[in-house]
Structure formats: C-alpha cells, structure tokens
Image (cartoon, rainbow, N blue to C red; front, side, top):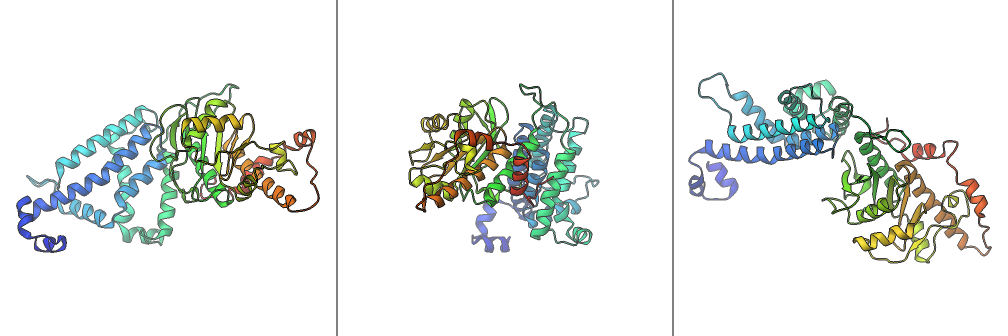
Amino acid sequence: MDSVAARAEVNIRSLYQHFNNKEQLYEAVFGDSFLKRHTKVLTAIDALAEGRATGGDLLRSVHHSLAESLAFVRLVTWDALSVDMDAPGTDVVASEVRAGMYAEEIRLVKKAQKAGVLPSGLDADLLLVAVMGLAIYPSALRPLTQLITGQSPESPEFRRRYDSFLDDLGDALLRTPRSEPVSADGSTQRGAPQNHRTLRQAARAVARAGLVTAFGHCSTRLDGSSFLITPSMPLGQISHEPGIMVPVTGDLPDNVAGEARIHQAIYRERGDVNAIVRVLPPAVETLSALGRTARPLDRNGAYFAPGPPLWSDTRLVRDDDSAAGVARALGQHSAVVLRGNGAVVVSESLQRAVVLAQFLEDASARDLAVRAGDIPPIELTAEEAAARAVWTGGIEERMWSYMTYNDPENE
C-alpha cells in the first residue's frame, strides 16, 4: 500500500478510506482494467452480430483489446495460475464483475450465431474461450511464441503477421455460408467480408497512387438502403479496419466523414451506381482552379467526354442540400469535379471507380500540359471518345491489378 500511495502521490490514509487492505485495492484495479478491455470485446462481438464486421475483424479486435497491454496479460495469467479452483472457498479476483461480463459476451455470441454470422453448431461459451485464447496466447506465452515463430510477439513484424493471420482465420472459420442477395439480373452480389476487404484495397490503392491526402473516402453499395464507407482516417493508414455501414437515407453514424452525405445523395439519385470514391488529385484540383475540367484529349479523357461537370461552390459539402446539389451536378456522368477540392468518381463497381479516378487525374494532367503550349489541342469527337471508352480486353482488371499490386490483402 505504501508503494502504491507513493506512485499515486497521495497520502496512504486516503487509500485506506476507500480500501481496507491491499486485496481490496487489487480487486478494484483489476476489475476496472478488466471492464475497460472487455467493453471493447462486447463492441466487437456486437458489430459482428449486426453485420458491421467480419470474423477476422472480431478476432483482431479481441486480440488488440486484451493483449495491447503486456502488463494486463501478465496479470491475468498470474492470477489464473495462482488460484486453485478446487480448494474450498477459493474464488478468482473480481469474480462477479467478470462473470457478468462473460455472460453478456456469450449472449452476443449467441446473437451472432442466430444472425448466421457465427457457426450455430458450436457451443457459444467454448467459442468465446477459443477466441480469447487466440487473443492472448502469443503475449501470455511469449517464450513459446518466439520459439515457434522466431519473432517476438511485441515486434511490429509479428504484429502485422498475426493481424493478417487472425483476419484470414476469422473469415475462414467463423463465417457460415449465407444466402447472397440476388440482383435484378439474377446474379449474386458478394458477401460482406469481401465487401470490407475490397473497400480497404480501394482505399490503399488511391492513397498509393497519390489521389488522396489525409482526406478522402471510398464507399460501396450493399443494397438499396445502405452502403459501406471507409472510416474517417487517412486512407493510406487503413490496415484491417472494417467499413462502416451507412443508411442511404438518414443520419450519419459516428466516425464517418461529413461528406458521406455526398455518397447518400448519389446513391439515392443513381440506382446504377454501386461505388463512389472521393479523391483529391493534384492535377484535377489545379485544372479546376482555372474553372476547367479535363477535355477528351486522349484515352483517359475519353471516359469522361465531353468532360466532367464542375461544382463551383468551394465550401465543404457537409449538409444535405449541398450534397443533393453535387448529385444533381453529377447527373449521368462518371465524375464531378469540385472546384479547388478534388472530385467525386462513381461507377458500377469499386474497382472501376478507382480506375476511373486514376484516368481522371491522368486526363487532367494531360490537359494542363497541353494548355501550357501555344498549339490548340485536337479533342476527340463524340464518336472517337465513345469508341475509345471501352472496358473490353481486361482494361479494368489490368489497371486494378496494377493499382493494388503487393496489397497485403490480395488473394
């Protein structure tokens, strides 16, 4: 108690006013730390049950929540090994707090099983034990982990490997087959885990290409009433974060950019649009400062002929009226340029939207270069542009492969 009081810089008598002995103090501190970490576990399981996360997201979230503090892992391990549950009157520390939290976690596991996102044939309590074991094993048994893998569990290399492993393992083991929604043409759409993965790949692709800075976002439609959007963070820093489900109509959830309202407005107006990327490419922004957008001068500009429309209002689009205005300005085009503030690119798939964003930047750079000369350029005619703006021959696939080369989630 003396050392605790000294480190807390309080008088020891004040400690004894709240705790009769060190055992009570230990139980209070342990219980508080336990609650903080397992509240995050509850959030992760609930996100899975609600369809906002995948099995891989669950394993990684639980791992990060329980193993982020090596001191906490050691404390839990020491406490577990020091208690003889067979001895009469023996109980684990903070048993009531922990039992209540575990019961709630089991309830949410059963909820996820009922929703079809966890295997219903497995015992919910044992499934929770297995998930927690995966979360803390590397840190709890550090020497064995290092002997097996040759890496320290605290090293950045191991953490990246283990995050990727948990993601793949979770999607492989904790996902049960679900019926896929059928589109109007009778084809099936991809399940949620693939949607999350492609969204992350798209985010990293536009970041690597220099099409975004600390700002920008991508989204993919789930159905007529909702879509997934990247969390409010630099897209190049996205690792395994899941997309956030947003209603096409209604309030925005937490941790999404205010400009997600643009996505809402476009999805409402354009039933043919299944993906949107909000980018900030330098050539596009420079050209827009002249009050211009890319002309169809080459193969890239052909996809936007006769040129993407320009939204002249330079304010951030964070209200419904402005977002509806951007959607109207877009019309039936593949992109709309926001003066001094990048562009919004849309398409039938996220892969194609990313490719079109790159084409728009390349077309804008070409247009800027031509404007610097004295010779008027030869624009593609409407017929020439239509003949060139094709997707046959694997154009989209090859560009997507190029832009996502060496992506950590490539299959």
